[in-house]
Picture (cartoon, rainbow, N blue to C red):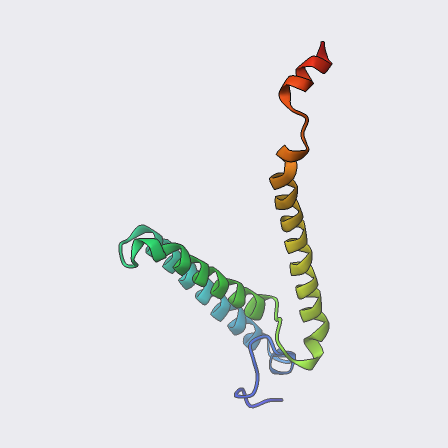
Length: 125
């Protein structure tokens, strides 16, 4: 068993025999997720941050939110036993970016590959 200082949230060694430790990890994650969500709504609805930098602040808070979910709920850590989980996560992110990038590329080039409207109208007659 570890001493608590050399482990990360979601580490299987630290949480293996302790249901209370697992629940505590989820509650800490929930608290951080709620705090980050409330902060996002607060920043978006007040003049606390300079108006043009609000999107940047929201992106930073969203990235922090993703980090909280990955560590506290999905238990994705950098330990050697989690190598497959990290690789699967990166592969999933790669697939998402390929699908989004391909869709944007298709939509951007759609007008160039379409037949002009006057030719389309002549074909329908």
